[in-house]
Image (cartoon, helix red, strand yellow):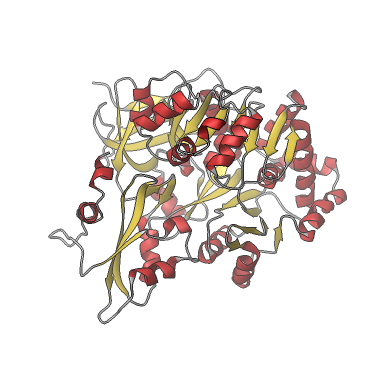
Amino acid sequence: MALSYAHGAHDVPLPGETIGANLEATAARFPDRDALVARHQGLRYTYAELDAEVDALARALLAQGIERGDRVGIWSPNRAEWAVVQYASAKVGAILVNVNPAYRTSELEYALKQSGCRLLLAAPSFKASDYVEMVEAVRPRLPALERAIFFETPEWDELRAGAERVSEDELRTRSAELDFTDPINIQYTSGTTGYPKGATLSHHNILGNGFFVGEGCRLTEQDRICLPVPYYHCFGMVMGNLAAISHGSCIVLPEAAFEPGAVLDAVSAERCTVLYGVPTMFIAELDHPGFDSYDLSSLRTGIMAGSPCPVEVMRRVVDRMNMGEVTICYGMTETSPVSTQTGADDDLEHRTATVGRVHPHVEIRVADPDTGRTVPRGETGEFLTRGYSVMLGYWNDPERTAEAIDAGRWMHTGDLATMADDGYVKIVGRIKDMIIRGGENVYPREIEEFLYAHPDVADVQVIGVPDDRYGEEIMAWVQLREGATATEDELREHCRGQIARYKVPRYIRITDGFPMTVTGKVQKFRMRETAIAELGLVEVATA
């Protein structure tokens, strides 16, 4: 009887170097090849130019007094500066703290305070959010934050000019002190207890994962990756930047945030060979009214991740977008992120019904959630992963780290999975009730905690309901205090501007109570069944 265990033994070794050293090696090999193109900014860097820009900012950070292990936050949509900051902070050994561009003041304050950021580098604004104003609102409560510097301002120019005060030799000395096992990145994931957790990742974690994701896509220095996914996620900064730079490929940023027309235009104009996205992005691109006017013949492969891909969408991506080698990736921020990936030659069934096989140098197994014993192949259990890719832990949170990573260093994902005889894994459900909305992980408890703060709310339960565009949408069942009169719109308004837009419930149901078990536990699956019927989502749920 075969057990649900697989080890990604591989002939190609892990990089075993720092991110800065990897960039320098690639720049030495391909100095004149394109490294980064930010179309919306009109910026274009070769590898030699990118490495020089990174070195200049790294020296500027040293001039600011940034020490090894200091936290430097970045709050920005996709733009060239994001990538430069990523590599510059790595070269000086600072820990980059990714701040979600959709964060509002309460979330921003929590991330900067919990991580103890000394310096924040940010865009001045994004869409309707005034970042300068929001930072000023929270700064009095952030004793560790010494400076906030915004791109395209005199302060940003002043910061960069500080590079002149630090020599190349001083930068080389700092870089030589670093080790590839050092923490280099903190990414906040929504927390089931109401507070985000700061997954702490090392050079080794994310450089190794980015490299082998690139190997899975067969990347070379000839490839050009169109990257519409956000940098603040592992999808952008690891599977994008680090996969590209470890192979000498080029990253093309079509816009600050996802715009289907900008993506199609970038692929066509820049002759991109690779395209990343979550399924909803590919759907929007395929349904764009001008789709047929774009030349996508240069495309070869790409990555679809974030949520399950419908068979018909995958078929259209392969046939109409020329992406015959497109792969599916599965993982989580805490695992850098990828644990499994489909192959470039896999058939449509494996690309849509599974999340692939074990990644190189990683172990995976499916275990009984109650006993911890590895289950036979074909049986359902919790998906666990172990190896170089598992995070160092949650920043300053040993208790929740111990809940996620057991004594054997197995990362417990909370996802229910099966492993077939051929080693392919299917994700069949979630032990906890996480919602995946358009590729964003949303934990109901976080939204529940926020809605509890409304004076009219006595109790609240948040669930995911099916949606044909985002995969799932957020619904809150709210029980009001006696005599309270809050409306659905008032409760939504309470959320707006305080939590990220994608977390604001689309549906709110004022209710007298929740379906319960005899022992008093809320039955969220019953709530979901009722909501599907009441909202007319039966067809979506069964599609």
